[in-house]
Amino acid sequence: MTAPRSEVVLRVADAVAVLVRAAPGGREERDRAAEAALRSAAQRDDLVICRRPSDRPALKPPHHELGVSLSHRDDLLLAGFSPDSAVGVDIEIEDINGFDPTAFAADHFSQGEAAAIAGLDSDAAREVCYRLWVAKEAALKISGRGVFDGLDEPDLAKHLDLIRIDGATIRLEAGSRLPSIAVSVTRLAGPTDQPIYCALARNLK
Image 1 (cartoon, rainbow, N blue to C red):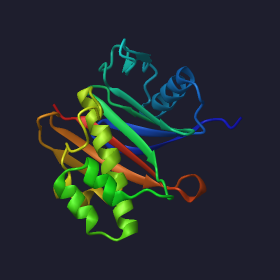
Image 2: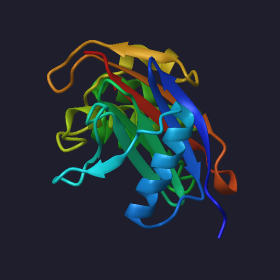
Image 3: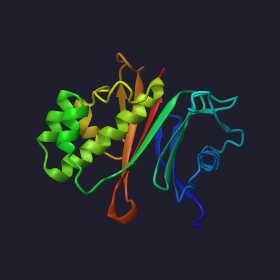
Image 4: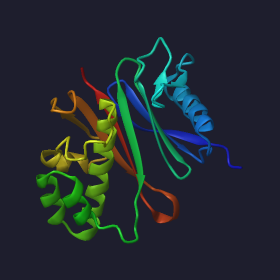
């Protein structure tokens, strides 16, 4: 079995996101792999991941309870950490077969976002769609409800230029479902020529 390897892929203020490749398959094993990767990246030996009754990952004191977030696809694990604030992360592997970004955006995103994606060529539309998707999922994890109420908020239609820049920080004012947050997205090389999209969001309150 290939040993997990990790790299820091995003930073937002004091928050960090670490990508663990060749992550183990079981939840407990993934939690321990994330814990080890975040301890190394943040240089915090006192970082301990546990689970809340809701099954949401959390941190033991002295850190902010919701200062950790995990997301995995296949054998890829994205782990986010902030010592003093709630964070959210999301990871997606691009589907190069049959995914329709225009239809997906029309069904799930705000009208402005969907219109912008509809006006792009197919490659750009797919990339922007995935960048929006992970940014929204990461942001909504901060609320504790995730995507339960849909992906129309936060509305990032005014920030499409920034969201296409790897590592750029987008600051958003509080909305009906979210506090004020900052979010950042990057696109990385993935398995079998399928790009990986990663996002990190941090509560600014």
